[in-house]
Image (cartoon, rainbow, N blue to C red; front, side):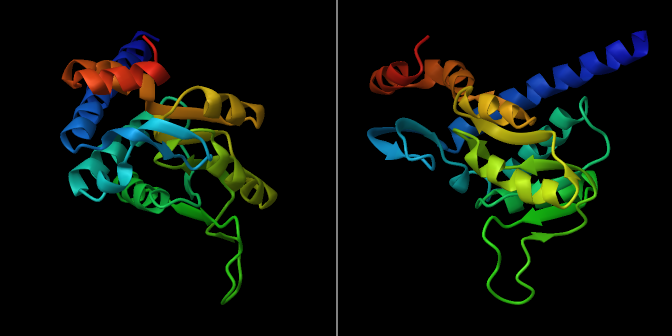
Length: 212
């Protein structure tokens, strides 16, 4: 028991270091956007604050960093699993990196069936545990849409992993469907860590949405 406790402590310490590296990398890559004019979110809402992974993940060092963190986040929860690619721009890229680093098979789910070839909805061996992979979420809708087709084919969907989670909305929505959301950091955690580096106008904008 003592050995397991020490091992878990080491995993958690390692995760905290990786989390700090992720947040610092977001800032250095200017991926944390604090816009003067509110941006439209995938959920349809508006926000001045956005984490732009589309300009962040194409760099191989950032992609490898996030893939390593995802694998570490899952380690205490599940050992044998496949990676579920959902309908988003960054999910295939992240799952591919995790597959290469962690030697995990990949399952692809299309919410809208392909209109050519075999017109399949899912691709890959769906038996056993499938972990849904995406880069960030506000409401969890993309992850929630992916779960039913996989479950209908025999997949066990208990976990989803994202880099940045806007707030607790996605966590609550996914929990209702029996899915635990794991994330590197919430937007509030990212903003809190980077607040000393923000200028006065940026601080004012983020405080309106993410008060201390």
